[in-house]
Length: 542
View: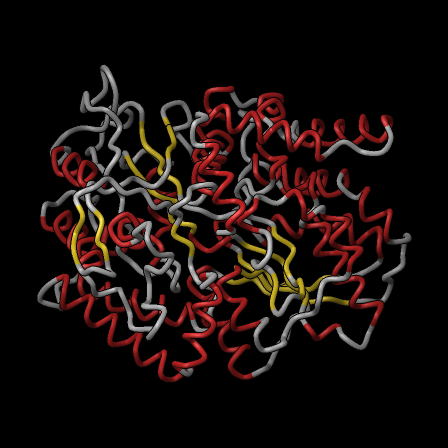
């Protein structure tokens, strides 16, 4: 976290969440003020009109809706590209196809862009569980068969550090208005050696979602909403054998995904571990920055693993949870009415009110990653009995990157960057934040309550949902992951060992954690310990 941002947040802590967000909204509104009043009205009208497509409560958006939004947001493209300018250009785009989001939306958004510019896009669609392996194969072999990639910042050490991407032209920076990003997504995120490469399309932090019919006066438990992992574990065990007030099916507490997800499932153990392991005295919580020795088998991480094992033993999870990956816990369980608590990305917030699959829209609430009533001080090797919050900034958001494959062909290069800029446009990004897309709010201008209300969201829901994101982004003890080479190799092998531990193949949580640590040591030695230490320190600002 930047020092000036940290100081600002510390000063702002005297303000409550709604005051902070109103201030952010005001800043966002000022940032949007254009040179001419007529242009201002037109810009505002575009934002208001796209948020009516299809409208909150009108069901899930369709391909027709995505195309309409893409067409209405072409204004910025037309200022930099003439009609038909990219005729004959073919580009290959690699990204996700999760839950019929990501690439499915990109196709719709870019179809009018293709019609206007004359370019053609070919698609490589990957499931989340396959994404890491496919990208790592391209990195390892140097065989890049795509011109544009949807990628998260953790991969920047692998891709940007190897010179595999194209540097962003200045006109793109102006078109997408990078100054509007929330501070934690600004440089050094998206940059390498002082050069900019990333068009952000997402913020990505994990926030806490819970059911109001389980907590509060007159609820199933009669308890207040849990604030700590200790309380979450306790209430999850108490709910065994009770009936869900919404569905009449068995009631459940917190939903941990117990199956891997191509490395992405490790973030969900991090949610528990960050409150135990991320001490305010250091930004490091995954590795020792002086040696790259894994911290994943210290008492804090062992406690996080033990929590999950205890809930398995107590029968607190839905049946066959051992085969539930994070996609299952969010879309097939929580939004469908199974379980009362979940940590996930912002998709759950927007989908709760705008997806046909959700039945919890009227009873869902949000907060930041739960705290722990004690934190492990890794420097001193002791537990401290004090409340500790550490929101998990999982994945630092998706971005669009143009690969070096376009270098040497200026027409193709401009076409690729124009497509990326269209997907990361300021207005289009507002729609993607408000509707099911795979992305969550990541710009200062996304925190203008009135725009969400005009789309059909009620004010209390918006303040709660956007507040959970803002409070996480701006938290002084946020747990931010490093942009180092091989980060998803570490995460993937950790998932493999966790699966063995949850299935009882290891004798204890400590043995499971030790297996992860041993595997991480091998990866570090394979990549090069000295270089990893240097890059890890740099990523932490040390």
